[in-house]
Image 1: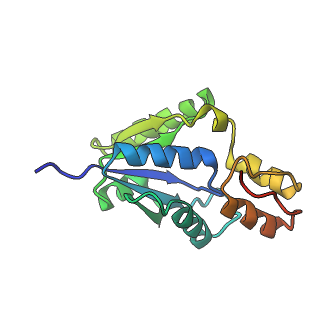
Image 2: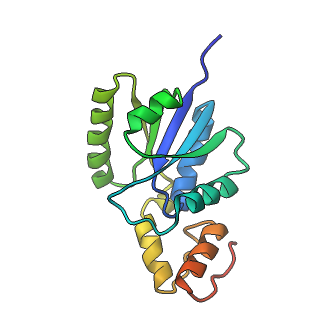
Length: 169
C-alpha cells in the first residue's frame, strides 16, 4: 500500500488572491492532500488576523475536498514533519520570486534532506498580482474584484471603509 502524498502550501495569504487560489487548486490535483498553512510572520504586519485568514481560505476553498487549512509559526521543516508531508508547494510569479524561493528551498533541504519543493507558476492573468498591491488598491478605494474572491473584496472594503466593490462576474 502506498503512502498518502501530502504537500504543504505555506504563506501569509494576507489576503488570499486568485493567484494563490490558482496554485491551491492545481496543487490539490497533484497531491492526495494539500495543507494550506497560514504563516505567523513576525517580520510582517498582518492586516487580517490569523483566524480571519484561515476562515477566508476555508470558506473560499470549501469546494476542494482534499485540503486542510492550518496555521504555523517557526521553521517550515518542522511543519513538514508534523504533517508528514513529502513536499512544499511554492508559487513563482517572477525571476525575483525564484531567486528568493530557490535559496529558501535549498535551506529547507539542508535542514531536512526529505524536504522537496515544488514550484508552480500561477496563471498568466494572475502572475502580476500580489497581496501587498491588493491591499494598497483597496485602501485607495479601487476595484479589486478581478484579483480576489468576493469574500476577500468585501472584507477589505469593510476593513478600509472603501466604496462598495461590484460583485464578481
